[in-house]
Length: 396
Image 1: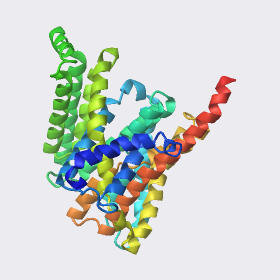
Image 2: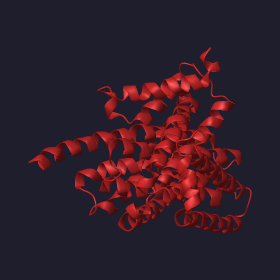
Image 3: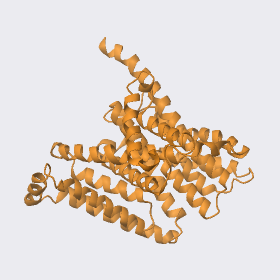
Image 4: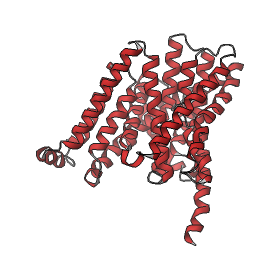
């Protein structure tokens, strides 16, 4: 019976997760992690309370776009420019080098025959997952949060661009590169217009409709989101690339005290309505039983989980002068939280083009999900201990 009411089931979980997070045990686990776990529990592979049908698949994709839109809105280049951004770029390039070396070693193992795809998957960071965790913990304004936001941005945007250039079957690599330049030019132009062109009549109109039933500023922002997702798809890029760019444009245009009311509204729409479909839906879609059906997958899954930490976590050594020593391990764990959506895209393309074996695809997705469950939880526990040690010192 419940399977015929997916929206109700999703929001029962969406309400239950933050309530569980208020308990003593749940307070150590990020809410998004609880949502994914509950999604696995109610899904077709465990309790079978809900099916992973076409509607949920569509809403999960929309939810992922909304989460990436909010991630783009949080990017304040004044906050991450300079050292955070340069370290993030160096860290991601270091991860690419490490991934190439790792995959070179793995390539000698039979059936591991997708070097480019595995390299890209290993260099991702789930900014969409880290964002609500940073917001809820109050770390966004701290040096730790600014550094992690910059690292997460590169860990999300870099692989998105790489996926679009390397894995697109619609256009050649050179065509994709040209489209990338055109797309970035359009984004830059739109951002400049949004920041610089603010005619008084337009501002007055948006202000009048901010609290009206028309909600024109919110609708306009969602139109920009849909438009850039459409353009990104037409250029052969992933939808999340367009969503992230749209978030940056809207975020730049609404920066400051005057945009606070609007940002609260768009927060409510994206995190209150769309995001649960992504996080809970991710758990529902995950076939946990597939991880134990064959020996190669069982062996590769923990290997990939460790490799995510090695490839994305090891560049934390670049941050030794910027972060306190006790913060380095939580930072490495946070950077190793993989972008599950991107990994799913990479494995899907790999399977469709016969460039990746099912064993590798299942192991990558399973390890990405485990990284989402394990690494942010460990990072939060370690960070809370660091803060608990620092608090008495600051009081003294």
